[in-house]
Each structure stands twice: as structure tokens, then as C-alpha cells.
Amino acid sequence: MEPFSMDSFRLDGQVAVVTGGAGIYGTGFCLALAAAGATVVVTSRTLSTAEEAAASIAEQSGGTVAGMVLDQGDRDSIATFGTELRERFGQVDVLVNNAVQRAGAGLFETTAEDWESTSVVNSRGLFLVTQAVVAMMVEQGSGSIINIGSIYGVVAPDATLYEGTPVHPYAFYSYDKAGMAGFTRYLAGELGPHGIRVNYLAPGGYNQSGESSEFSVKYGRRTALRRMALDHDVSGAVVFLASSASAYITGTTIPVDGGWTAH
Image (cartoon, rainbow, N blue to C red):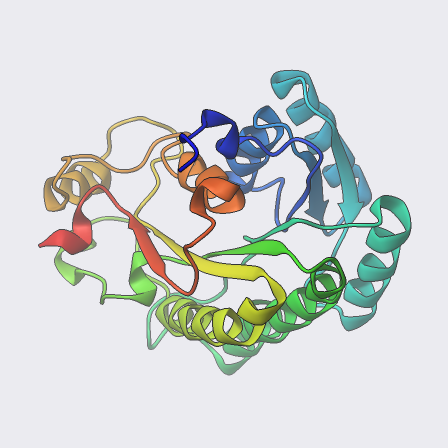
């Protein structure tokens, strides 16, 4: 038996696509993947946003990072992205499905138009982007897809945490993220024979500012680790699932939630 090597966490020579890579979680994912040696493709709906994010991530990580346009709500944009990705890089080894459309609020505050706008991106768009990128992975006979879901795709929100705060759970969110979890299991079975792994990360709440608020305090008390997620708390799991260190893991849901779903 060969000894375990820490090099199995490296992504040198690989191309990793992160949808919504200029966003809250996406930037951290891109930084981590670039630091692990991957050539990272940051996508955004506008080229200027994608390229600015790519330049910043490259400067911080010292890695190779490119920005590309991808509007996950536009079928033509997805088709163009797939073609340009193939022409520009010739391979894709990692796909991080991170982009998400948010609209509406609670059950009675969400309109039909809100629901449709989220579905176009979070359901149809997810399917079409995955379809376009996976075609290249199938030809290669390898790849890792990491779907960024949520604990709210696994369990219900705790309504008591939101009472008296300006924060609210979205009505669409549990539906879309639970659907993503089911899609993950389907893809794992469908693509496993092609050497492609597919997994679902279920992050808990993220405290973007790092500052204390009424909601962050209440949320933190609900977790085993007594805090919300901070920068880089989820990124390590993304690198692990992207790398050969997780070569025998597919079709699974991994909570990264500070112990929220443990009790």
C-alpha cells in the first residue's frame, strides 16, 4: 500500500470553474482553489465584474485566474460560455455550482414573478450549466462537481431565530436547495461510470461582516460551535472535494454548519 501524500490535495494542472465566483462565498472558493494550484475561472453576469474579481483573486492567491461571462438565467449565455470555455481551456476538471438568484421573502411576501425568476437561474440554469460543462468531463473521463447548497435544503429553518430581526428565510431557498441535493444524487449515479464525482455541500449561515448582531448571536447559540461561518470556513471542504483526496466520495451531502444539523 502506498503511503498517503498531502499532494493529493493539490490541484496543479487542473481547471476549476466557479459560477457566481465574484459573490460572497464564490470569492473564497476561488481563492482556495487557486492557492491549491488550479487555474480558476471566475464567472459573473458582466465581464467587467468577472475580470475585476479574477484580477483581485490572482493577486491575493498568486495563482492563475480568469474571468468569463456567464448569465445562468440566459440559455444563450450558457451555450456561449460552454463553447468559449472549451476553446479557451480545452478541459474542465472541477465545476463549483455556486451561483444563486434571490428574490421575494417569506411565504406570503413572495410573488409568482419572484418564484419564476429564481427558478430560471437556480433550477433551469443549474441544469444547463452542468450539462454544458459535464460534456467536457465525460470526454476526459474524469471530473468533480461540487454543488453549493444549504442546510436549508436538508432541514427546515428555525423560525425563532428570525423573530424581531431584519433577517428572514426565503421561501424559494429550501425548495431550490433541496432540489439541488436530489440532482446531486442523480448526477452521481449517472456520471460515476465516466469517472465523474458529484457532491453537495450544505453550508450553514455565513457572517459576511464578521461583526456581532442580534441575529448572528441567536444563530450562533443554535450551533455546536456557537458561531456563524466566517471567511474560509467552507473553502477547505471545496478544495477537499475537488481533489483526489476525496477520490472515493460521491453522491453525498456534507454539512459545513458548525454542528447545526447535529442536534
